[in-house]
Amino acid sequence: MTDGENVYVFFKDFGFVSYDAKGNLRWKTPLGPFTNMQGLGASPIIAGDSLILVADQWEHSYIAAFNLSSGEMRWKVARDEAESWGTPVLVSKIGSGAGDRHREPREAWDAPRFEWQAHSDGDGIGYGRRRQSGCCGGHGVYLWLRQRNAGAVSDRLQRLDKNKDGKLSPDEYGVDPVLNSIAKYEGNRDGIVSEDEWDVFARKVLGPNCLIALRIENGQTRELWRYDKNFNYVVPSTLAYQNVLYIMRNGGILTTHDAATGK
Image (tube, rainbow, N blue to C red; front, side, top):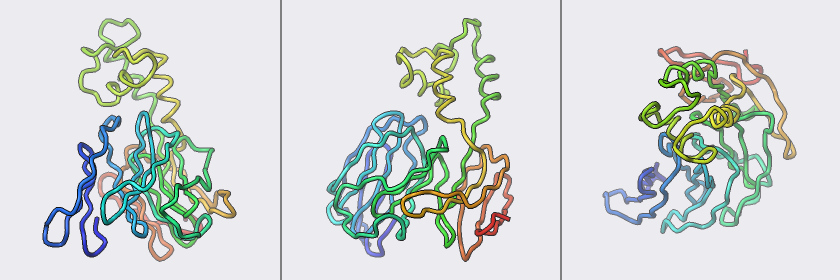
């Protein structure tokens, strides 16, 4: 990303690097390592003179702000969240509206009904969960809420269980990123995926599978509408422009919705 003068790049295996317009290195800030099954893919955003990063992972999730001029960390706040890959979205009209982004933020609102949630801090930084990012328009905050197909995963586990002992060992799950992460970070972390450990993981990721619009009023969220469709494995983020939502689905299918009604 760029602020018009300099470039800011985040690498999941290193951290932040900044270059000027001529390609000269300005600063670098090592971060990590991160505990995501497929790497930390959330892009940072610029908010005033700070760079904001949401690092949601299997453990030690946080949101942090970095000085654009030096790369120095200004604040870092722990988050009680599982991993996600959603890029933050700056929502200027939500929260207190006060302007000091150098202070440690507080959570201003939450949507607790959903397994994969959206939040905003006191100065109005909002973001969607999972792979898609939320987006903001004149009528509210729009989020994809995607549910995993638990039945298909359960069938796959049964197929991988070669010795039929009800659990998976490293030679059975191989390089599968999901099962490797469950083996490392769930339960007793012994490298074996048990049925109980899988159930804990499934409860974390199962949730609504729809497009939903939320309006944030006085620190509370109110559902405006929801469009119930099967969006399994639909990765692109939603775009809001001039009261229209644009959704790109797998296979190159573009769908538009009225932002006010969902039609």
